[in-house]
Amino acid sequence: EPEVTQTPSHQVTQMGQEVILRCVPISNHLYFYWYRQILGQKVEFLVSFYNNEISEKSEIFDDQFSVERPDGSNFTLKIRSTKLEDSAMYFCASSGVTQRTSALHFGNGTRLTVT
Amino acid sequence: GDSVTQMEGPVTLSEEAFLTINCTYTATGYPSLFWYVQYPGEGLQLLLKATKADDKGSNKGFEATYRKETTSFHLEKGSVQVSDSAVYFCALSDQGAAGNKLTFGGGTRVLVKP
Image 1 (cartoon, rainbow over the protein chains, first blue to last red):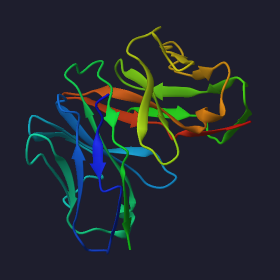
Image 2 (image 1 turned 30 degrees about the vertical axis):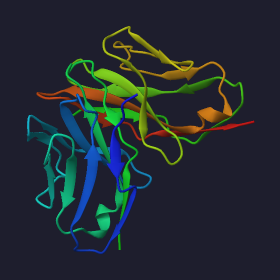
Image 3 (image 1 turned 90 degrees about the vertical axis):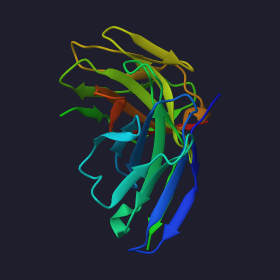
Image 4 (image 1 turned 135 degrees about the vertical axis):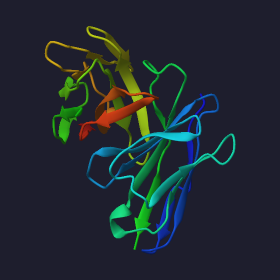
């Protein structure tokens, strides 16, 4: 079964550094998402992406965050200047063509640790 | 805004016991409802879904029925196994302009003991 893949599985970075989290969504999917889960807390929506532009973003997704689909397969999340509170598990997801019934398929996540 | 409330865990059960995880939601429209499962060290996997009132989603012995009148989507399994130990998330999808943005509940950790 096709799956969403994320790299790296674990990223450690120093405060103030830039990080790029990478995702390869399922190949025929059209909608792409980033979510995060701070340890012990809810899974939170960050951003959705469709037709090469952001379709919706949460208040968490401030100017420090950006997303990009640089080619036909990758979908990236960049954090320009990481803060301690950015430490979390970041999940990429994708969904298919049928908006109403298409479930999101998640990757295994990237655990980001900011020191 | 949309929200999902599910019972807090951890829920500890013996093998072959009956499992129920309560989930209620608040939404302005007619959302689709989902249960996702997160096994230790893994990502979120879709367990089951229901897209309209009275639909029943089922998978791997788990079931949940979309109850519009009580705004609930409780997860049940008649006989759990040790391998069902995981965190279970109830979620709803916002019928946004593009795609299905999910709103998650807080998750319920289930531990099944042999």
